[in-house]
Length: 377
Image 1 (cartoon, one colour):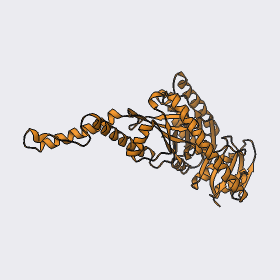
Image 2 (cartoon, one colour):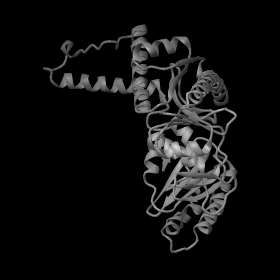
Image 3 (cartoon, helix red, strand yellow):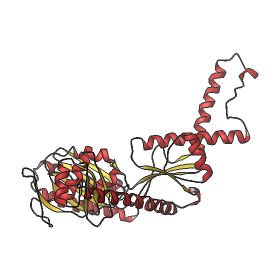
Image 4 (cartoon, one colour):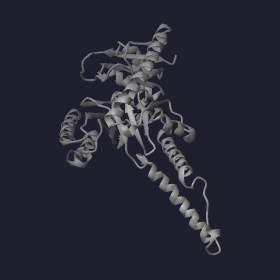
């Protein structure tokens, strides 16, 4: 299962489309008795998908049937996030865990319904949060939809654990040194930089701890587009910046040890709102200038054709509401129907798909038009 897909993972998924494609989206409960509802909701959506596909001998129907085991997998449903996406075509199925809510949906077409994932995958409105104190480091994904703590082999990390690793390494060096010596006595005494008593040891331990945290962060953000924000006191943030060699866009000045998770989430949400407001204003200005120069549009037909030609640099979506219509690829014509019918697809999904495949970016935007685009040329 893919967790919280990034842009490249979403592009890779699109490139695996083959034949008829089925997408199942569903919100999921994360804890408590409500998690029992997850399997019931999935069972109903799976049945709906099979009904839309039709023939049980169809290759896609067989792939869908292979997923029936999940209905009874209580362990699976007890470890969910905010949403789940399931992508199925003739020769594959892929489960994707989401860090944002989605509407329960079954979508059958010649492509996957990737639009509800596109903006989150492009990471433009989200950030990573390092909640750092002298005692421990916690790692979060933050978005306008909420805050998700990442728990893995690296995080959370404590100072005791990371400093103990150094002490174990130095003890091994000391033992190795003695094994090469000629007996015992004063010659066996080994001294290590920063390993003395009192304040010098505390300072050395703190530096080592922050350097190790910096390495963990560097691994976590490698090849990612999200901004990094640090929540820490001035003292901790200053030391971290000095020794870790990690660039971060801002510091939320607070001790995470003195805050509940909900208070941490509140402070990060406030930071994101302010940060994203600036981004929205810039996007609005870019869109206005592009339309004035005839290098942008709010016309969904024009946008879909531009996306199919790989001409969109930035696609702006104000909502996840579908834009039903039909596309005649041979004649390069797009017709908006406004209602789902035989042969109809979500035009905004086609636009998002084409934008991603051409290396463009998808944003959630607060413009009055539900779909808008800034062209490359």
